[in-house]
Length: 289
Image (cartoon, rainbow, N blue to C red; front, side, top):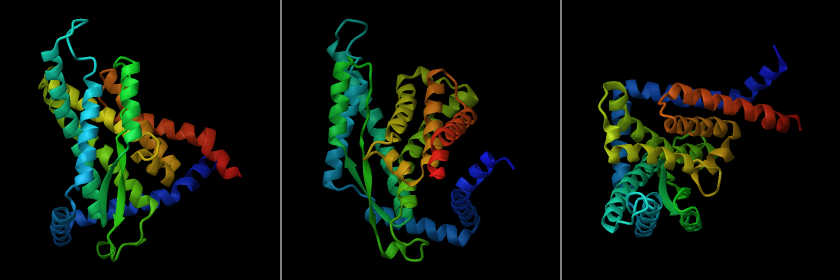
């Protein structure tokens, strides 16, 4: 076998085993009624007890939502070059709803998967990043969006982690919980867009649904940037190869959306190309020492 492909296989064998175990266990649990129902009610109980937001989290979420709504509605204070206060206020209100749904969806994703694996999740806004985004939108007159919301902190719940392989907090668990937020945004955007793609329902003609799909993908893409404390940085820290594939897929699909193409197959193909390019140009050199 060619040494190049041999190294690729060796590089990902541990990662493949881990993900195979995760998906196999999920498959078995899904078709095991007793286990599934037990985990279902256990998760509901965890969400009731540990899923609420603290006062500081609510404050951070409100600031984040208002700032991002202002950023995405910056160029919508009138039609053309004419300033219209009432039009702009309506646009800002619509943006507030869209951003609130998007941010809340991401936090639900983080919290549900975190609690499922025995972690209490805390949202930490990144105020310097939000400020940079506001400055950038003024400098670019609303052309450039820079959405840097912050990240999440995992609090290890000892009792709820009993029986887990690798009992303590580890990079795999942190990266999975971090990716759950952007993944929840992608799922929401897919659910909203699917009726139009499969059944021809023209939801994109309604500004709310069209902007909701676009902003969820944009939010997921920015969250995956490898900048601490954004979720993407924790995925990169766990596995550079996994990160290159995930970010390549999400970024590729975002570009396809702009081009009017909706295809997860092409997105995964772009992600695989990103992975191969990164491995060929960088990762392979690290292993050579």
